[in-house]
Length: 114
Image (cartoon, rainbow, N blue to C red; front, top):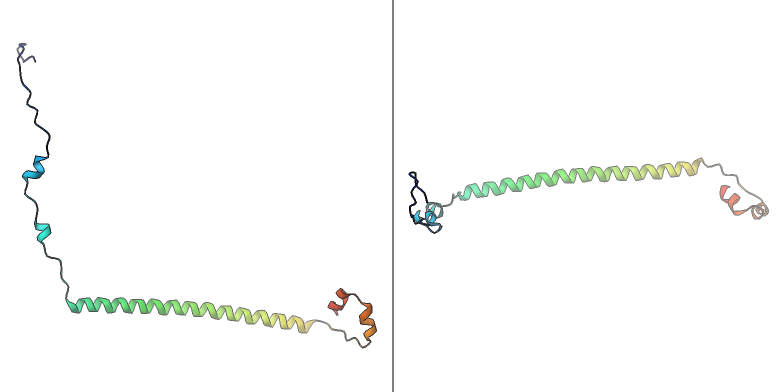
């Protein structure tokens, strides 16, 4: 290689092996491993458990109310449909046939209308 004056100098490039020594040189961080977990008292645990139970009960009651409302709507819709059908049947004009011979002369479609 040439140096700044222009002379050739032999320099042996020291190539250090690329090992991850920086990781090994720093000591292992044991503070995270040795830290104690946060402990909660028994009263707090039971209080949280009761709160969850209460919330679930409230959610269930709300769901039951919604379902009851839907069932009530369905029941009323069916009742109204039955009432409509009964009213339609009552409103039909029926002509009583005294002579049964006339009934035999009519076709099946005409009998249904009567």
